[in-house]
Amino acid sequence: MNIFLVCTGLGHINRGYESFAHECYDALRDTKDFKLYLIKGGGKSTGNEIVLQNLPRRNKSTQFIAKVLSSDPYKIEQVTFCISLLPLIFKKKPAVIYYSDFWLGTYLWHLRRLLKFKYKLLFSNGAPNGPPFKTEDHVQQLLPVYLEQAIKQGAPASMQTLLPYGFNIDKEERLNDLAKKENIRKQLGFSSDQKIILSVGTINKHHKRMDYLINEIAKLGKDYFLIILGQFEAETAELIDLASAKLPERHLITSVTYEKVKDYYIAADYFVLASLNEGFGRVLIEALSYGLPCIVHDYINAKQVLSENGTYLDMQKEDVLAQYLRNTHPKIDPKYLIQAAYNCYSWDVLKDSYIKMIKQLFD
Image (tube, rainbow, N blue to C red):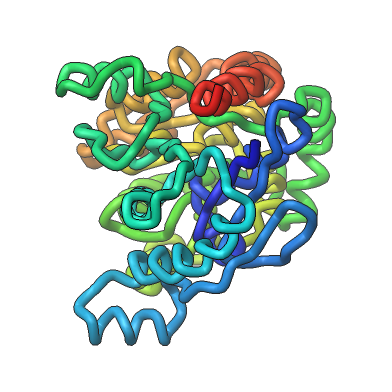
């Protein structure tokens, strides 16, 4: 059976959807249970990784077309990608199309209805969306809270699987990396006595609340250094100006490759995610898997992701984060955090469950 793992942003955007799609393909591509294709919107076509023509959401022409049509550049990306996907569907006849982008799934449902395709639609519900689930054959729910809410609202339990994101976590590699922590800090230009606060995510105010983070760290001493890594958006320039004014010579706001983020996870002392809500928050597990203490807003989603391995603060209030960081905290053994991340989220542990979820749609 041919299985399509589809992600329109992969190759030109770096969010949780994209990193998950790439890691999922790497983890499952050697299975003998089905033939897996990674269908993406950018990068290079190699082997079963196939790039399709589309109008990326951040392309100026896409944004111009969206303005003329009073539409969303993201939707235009998905529509044009879907059109390019048609010849591949005719040729490969996939049994299952596995995706995270809700609008893409909606368009694929309409195509199936109009052209009598036979594929099943498997939706990884990372945002999350729904219920009701009208255009999905099966839904992967990442956390118990979403599954419980969906069932309460009438979605059958039989069409849902509770299965968290998988992560590439090599325990021995992580421990070897941590042994190089001081060298990596020096290579990045940091001294051993600096306290490095790291946040990774789209650099904006409205969701990731990077302005809250900047204002809180500004209340601390000069030995505290803030690093923000992520995709730039319209609000990013304003945030850079704010950090320049409030954290002169003790901040870094930039975009780096996914591979380079690893060095900053190793170098940091704390990881902070100031958003008040996340569908899952892959960066939390990435940070945890490097033995990094995670500080998050106090809400059910974060607690189900990190369990007892997180620090939960009411980040709707001013001074709460600054006060916490100012205090002395008991030393947390990084080895314990790495093991916790591995036990719950490594592909070594979850791979068979993913294969089972996909196979049930065509067995």
